[in-house]
Each structure stands twice: as C-alpha cells, then as structure tokens.
Length: 326
Image (cartoon, rainbow, N blue to C red; front, side, top):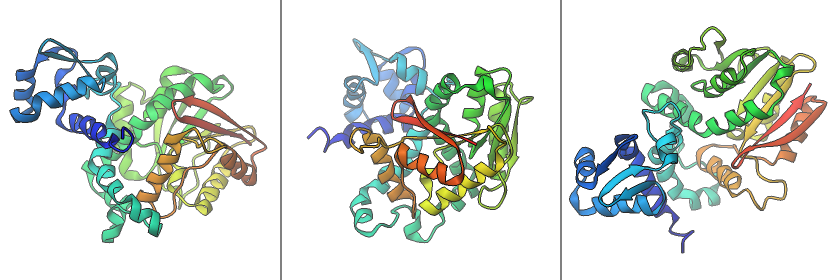
C-alpha cells in the first residue's frame, strides 16, 4: 500500500515546490495562518497540507510555527545557491502527468510526452526560454551532488583542462573549478544555452576560467580537453547513438585523456538500484530510444570505442561514474 500510494507523498512535495512553501519560509519560521496567507491557500486543506509536509520530514513544526528542516532549507529554498529543486520543478510540470501513461508506454514502446502530439520535445524545449531554463535548472538539480562527489573522487591533480559535454547551466564545471583552482575548462552545448551558462559562471566569479563552446554533439566535433564529461547524456539515446557519442569523445581526447560518464547506473545484477531502473523507465516515457545502462554495459561500449582502461566508481546516492582512459 505504501508503494502503491507513494504518489500521494510525491505530489504533496511537488506542490510544495510549485507553491514556494520552502522558499517562503527561508531560514525563518512562520505561523500556519501567516504561511497560508502568504501562499494564498484555501483554509480547508492548508493545515493538513502543511502537517503532511511535517510528517514526511519536509518541514518542522513547533506549536503552530512552521520552519524548514536543515536539508530542505539547504536544497529547496530558491534563494540559496545550493538550491537543487530544478529537477522537482520539472517532475511536477512534465513527468508527473506523463507517467500516468506508463502502461501504454510498456505496451507500445512509444514515448508518452509531447511526441504523441507530433511535437519534437527537444526542439520545443530549446525554443521556449522559460521551458529551457526550467530544463537546465533540472539538470543542475539532478547533477549537483554527483558533481561535488566527482570533484573529490576523480584524480584532477593529473589533469589541467576539462569540458562538460551537454553542460546545461554549468553546475558541474562550476563545482569542479571551485574545488580545484588549477583547472581550466568549460561547457559544450547548443548555442541557446550559452547565455544561461555564462550567467551561472559569472555568479560564481569563474568567467576567467570557464568558457562556453557552442555546438551540437551530433553535427560538430567535441572540444578537445584532458577530460571530457557526459552527465545524464547517454541515457537519452538508443544504443547506436550512445556508441557514436562515445567514439566522438574518444576522438577528441589526447592520449592519456579521460572520459567521465555519470548517470544513475543500474547495478550489474539489476536488483538493487531501483532509482536507476526507474530512470530507465522514465526514458521509455520521455524518449524514442533512450535507456539507462549498467556499469558493465557502459564499460563495454567504451572499450569498443577504443578506450584502453575503464572503471566504475560510485559518486553519491544512486549515481556512479564510468571512467575511460584513452
């Protein structure tokens, strides 16, 4: 019952993000009436809603006074630079309704998003500035923890330059540059992403060390750097495209250079990383051919592309990285 009705708790949190509950609280406390008034909530469900967030561990309450928990204050307050709720915003706006058609996706093998109405999802997303920023923020949100772990676990002292392929807002390059002052690098993405990337980098005061490279990894060669990174990129595509992107990365790297692929890798036994398996089902709902892979599978494709050494290292939560050395 808890699993089957899990969407109750999920939608309660997603609505809290949409309404701005955690941002309204910030680092202070508010009475239930004040919070209800600030959020323009109807009195009938407001108390149950706020107390449900308390019971789910998303808020704290002292009498009638509500406040963020340490974690929600850190990660779900939009006013904080550590905000990681972009993925939750996209989950609420897009994924939640599309997942209602999972059964149809399993029967047909077809995506259940805007594609059903003849719309090119990626083209529409990049053409609409509001949707583009929401998507880029979502990619930052889902990558932030992995980027910080990567900064700590990868031997960056052996390298001088890097480029994040499909860089979105630039969250990963920013984390790497903040952690390692000797690194120079940047991001590679479609031209429309450039201003958002540069805005993020400027806010971190890293414009002198991080540059944006405009292009398409389908049409253009990838930038050359000591290390190339692909975060949550390969799982969007079918096997043929995965192999093509890995080959392009191999060709762009110098001898001794490394490629880092990080995603919610499915465990090789396909039993324990439920998030990775569910993410792969999300690719079924969202794309025509995408799927998530095991670490062993990704290593095999890397070796086919020419990489002489490969290994898998855990990052954080359900995320791991596959490293290939040319």
